Image (tube, rainbow over all chains, first blue to last red; front, side, top):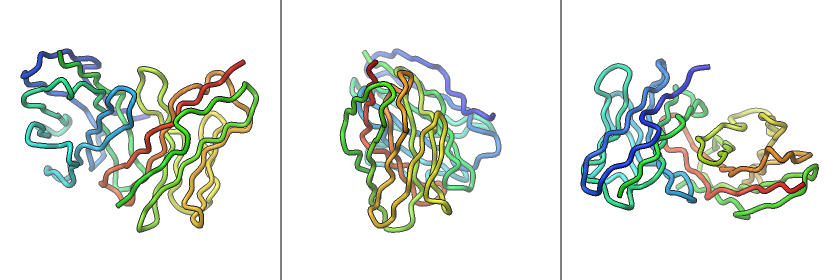
Length: 113
Length: 113
């Protein structure tokens, strides 16, 4: 079964550093997403991406965040200057044209120290 | 705006007992509804989803859920709990392809022997 692949599985970074989280969505999917889950809390939507542009974003997704699809397979989330409160599990997801076709990756645990 | 309410942040059952996890949603248009399970330190696994058609949906691991439009509910049930069912369960809703999947706060299911 096709999978969404995320790397790395765990990243530790110092406060103020830039981080890039990487995802390889399912190849024939059209929509790409990032979600985050702070430890012990619910999964929160960050951003959706379609046709090479952001289609929707939440209040969490401020100027510190950016997304990019640098080539035909990768989808990245960049946090420009990390804060302690950015520590969370970040999930990438992709979907096809069906609203129920979501597939999530296994996540990247980001720890900001 | 869409929202999901999961009643009960923690549910405890005995092995072999009925599992009932409650989910109510708010949506201005017909929703697409999902239940995900998350085991400790793991990603999100899709249990089942409601799109259109039959309102009783069967998923993996013996779980099922019934969409009740009049009650705006999508409760998750399993006739007989197993120790391996202990996990965090999230209900989620979306309206159309490419839009955010909105999650509830989650319910932790504990199963005792």
